[in-house]
Image (cartoon, rainbow, N blue to C red; front, side, top):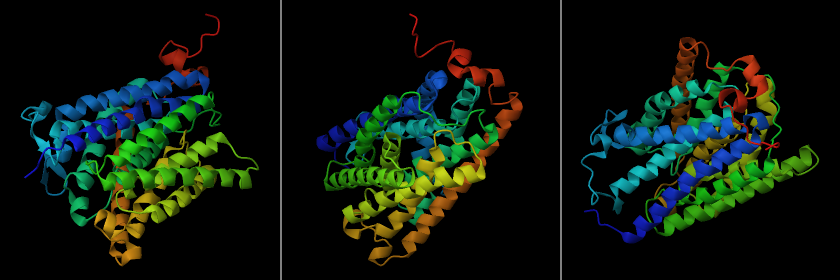
Length: 405
């Protein structure tokens, strides 16, 4: 029988706010700083509106379909629409069910906000506002159920502590699909207009990520402590390794590279945080930036896709590595499941299946949705003049910097 724990509840309340912080303001500032000055407000707006739309959908029916009683491993059985019937005393483990609903709401909103980074500078606001709820219903909710809500990947034994597949691979590959439909920007250079904003956003992400991973065991215990330790060391290793790559390849360290490496390390450790020890975290954190660096500076130019702020390059690619690495480094004494290094090579196969399933499903549905919207609304992309002039002035009639006022 579930027993209420004030300690667990207090911890997950804090973690929920930390995950919310990762979207507003962290992703908003991170992406806003990386964008061009003429598009900073639009870039920030994409995060705010996405998180708001998801928050509404989640409490009306999204949570119910994601975490309701399993139907054939594919989706949850919807009950408690508008959260009706869930009382203040209902428990999920040792915490109130309503708290679990909000914790998961923050994850859903964050995932959609992350996706926006690939699309900045060229997508109509109306198209994004229509795409977000459709994507949430058809992509995020089913995958959340598959992995966390009792669906077929959970039944298979796929490990995803805090969102390697559900959050990072999902947002990364969906972003890539929509970016392919939108096409390349007129100016694809990445020259951050305000690197200070981006550093602030990355620092807040690092801070918030401790709740993102640390709260995913839904308890204030040793597993939460381990998740925070391995998350922090993976981020630190990611930052150091990317800095080394920059110094060796470019000839000088960059703050943009440093924060990119930290985020890559955090992404890589996300699925593994509740299953690996410090050794595994150090390896995951070291390899994540190498994979993302290669994806951004070698694969992207070769294939020619325009992933504006490298959502697929960092979240997608490091997420894939992290999910597979979980199957390699999982320590039975920590998460209860052994990985390859502890005599269970089958776990790697299960992790690969979860990665492939997420990529195929997310990409296919996101691409189809984007194509339908593109055809039905006369194109999802802004006019050439609006793109060149900037989305802040053309779509919002606002400017981030009024120097003459």
